[in-house]
Length: 334
Image (cartoon, rainbow, N blue to C red):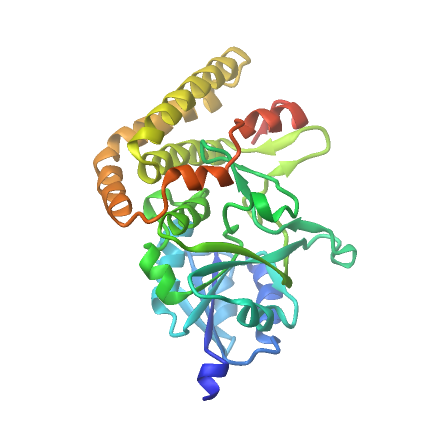
């Protein structure tokens, strides 16, 4: 009876050279009021002493990858190793409230992915809201929705609560995506298969935001990187090709190609040719992996339960990257 009332929760934490963050994260997971948990840290071949530190933690299972497998593959490995009925997938730059898992267990419903309330880890005492789910435009790019439950499209990969069996049925993270937009893709497929993505405002998580892939508004302008831009663009293209029906994919991808062409010309003419090259590399990657994308697409479309006409109602029809440009100006690429 105890296991039915208190099912095991496997907390899967991905780490890559994040020891300063990881120490705080593990401390808050270990001190949860909910006790039927296991802690799994998947380390992507860190060189900062993380593995040595984790080995000293008696309550933590360490999975050591021989190289950096990226977010998607490493988390899939962690979930596969998990023995819990539920999994809480966490970034290493998160910290939990003492009752975070208790609240998730109490709020969970069948065929549902739960989104904890994220607060900024910086200046914890102010408890400033970071997010409670994220919105997506029809091109697959995320945007801030504040706390609006009507615009939630996906669960941010920093903190995702889901039944292990549901994670497997959805297909896990797409390992070809390596990093970025893999959480969008997971929730997108979940919606196609008839799952719900719900906010859980009573379950709270502190999140630094970005960790060692720092990004966001700086003192004078928005800060990002060529690495992030390349993976964002290639993954957005693959997600469109996989997740939309043909009637939606064709016009949306065609429009995105026009937007990308304009962005390429603008970046190239403004002296950002290395960044402009990211777009060419993104398309070349998708051409190279086109057969794999189509095979994945067939699996998704064959299991589809919810039509695109329903799913796009949760999306913005505006190209949200333009909103970011208007608000922050031309990004600073590092």
